[in-house]
Length: 160
Image 1 (tube, rainbow, N blue to C red):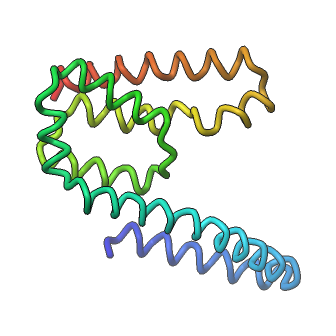
Image 2 (image 1 turned 90 degrees about the vertical axis):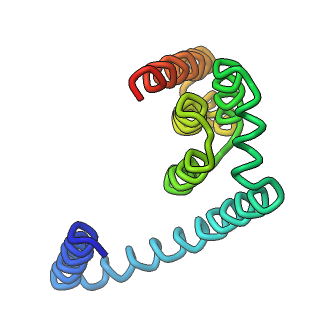
């Protein structure tokens, strides 16, 4: 573990102890809620990790790189961005996945487009966003996010 991770653990433990000292009952109740929320999220996270592992076992990163590498870089970027819009993967799983794909030879622009749309555009979360903020806002935000994701990918491709 690096020094930052150790520092975060120490700070977290210190704040938990301080909370226990201040109000033991509220802290225990919060810990119970956090445990049950974490347990619920863990099933989803493990399902996503399993799905990614399964996909990478069937279609290795090298094969994905070959498939994407045969495409025009702009076509591959748009395709990766489109795939990122419909995929619902937590960012902490997406970053290692992008690292694996990048080390296998997938270009910077498609990788950035996938990652950026994955985190900025939400087709899977659109119904919730529409209900909470309205259709006009949800559509506008997702369209602008997609456009800016493509711009970011092209800029990163130019820089790197």
